[in-house]
Length: 280
Ligand code: AMP
Image (cartoon, rainbow, N blue to C red):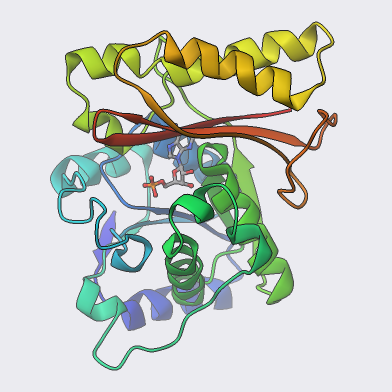
């Protein structure tokens, strides 16, 4: 695996592979890799001639009060994991290389980013769509792989690609979970023992929602109330939001719509804000 630090160098490599008629699979990450990230890498490897992974903790998607400085990092371990997966190129740029002095251009998707994560984190998605646009221009992928864990991010990026005619296929893949159901996340590292135990409440509440829907309940408010009750049984977790939206436009739903429903939530477990969701 070759590690590339400079955007122009990564772009030259991408151009070469394109000239040679090879397909490029790309997985953007912020590092501190876990099996969720690696599931994307495996899929990229399987379906493309060459696999690029990026590790970049993108400052523009963090608000000043968020965890940019303490975001977990372990580049040596990440390199080892990616080598083991047979990744061809790791793009690992510096902040200065991605945002040099004078940087002043942003990409923003409008309505889809006003709700859910966007309502709680108003500057977040502008940072995400800007960096992903840059990464697409640098790595020139045929296919790019994203997790359904960040459901709104995946939906927003699909919209951006469609609206701005990016020539890339966006592939969304299932959430990878720990054995007790907690969705894997780099941020799980922040949890102490008791918080880690109670963090399972997100998954438990989604399971309850699934059960209710399977039994025929389709009223969104009833489902949200039951989910809230489950979380409130725990000591530490504090709900940020629980929401039921259409997958197509992220409009709030009163009734569950088959194949067009996203149930999502954000919960503070101590100081750590966790998200999880269920695609119906
Ligand atoms: P991050 O490093 O958190 O920015 O995540 C990089 C990519 O990995 C994003 O597309 C995430 O949605 C995806 N991802 C993170 N956690 C999981 C998970 N538990 N299962 C599947 N994909 C994930």
